[in-house]
Image (cartoon, rainbow, N blue to C red; front, side):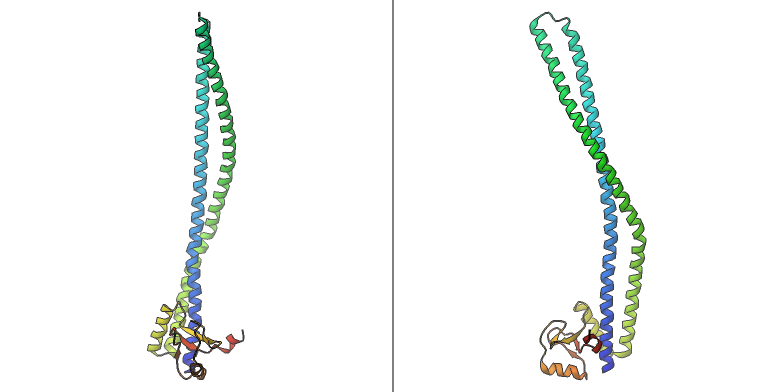
Length: 241
């Protein structure tokens, strides 16, 4: 019976390792995904800034064309002034010229603002390019290592399962192996619980004194009356920790 209890404790320790390894395995693809997502985010940022810069330049060109068009109209109207015969026509045309000159002044201000914005966008663009290059570099340097680590974790888990299987076959009857497996599946990876302060370490329920005595005797496999986990005394080396 002592061999069976020790086997259960050993198997649970292995399953604790398996749970830890599975947690690592679940985290590794997430880390890889985060690296790839970061590359996409930084590249998208670069593309957006590039588009903003291109749009800004297009807008400046439109402003310049509008100024050129207005200047052509001004020159045309100024030539017409030489042939105007009435004060009313002269005043109306002069007002039109004045309006076009005021419009050009306002457009000049818009061009200056657009140029300032272009300068800021170029600074952001250069910074975003650097960020994107660093993100790609980080992905390139870590992707292979992460994939290798995922493969290694799978190998580790397979090896641990083999160790657990060997211990089970060597020390436990088939029915108890099946029971242990069901508990591992249904009790969040914890089939074996220890007596801690007269309670089940698995569910925390207080144990009956008679049940504790039977567990201490170690003459049979005892289950928690609340959660069904296999109850054993904590190994001496664990108690001393």
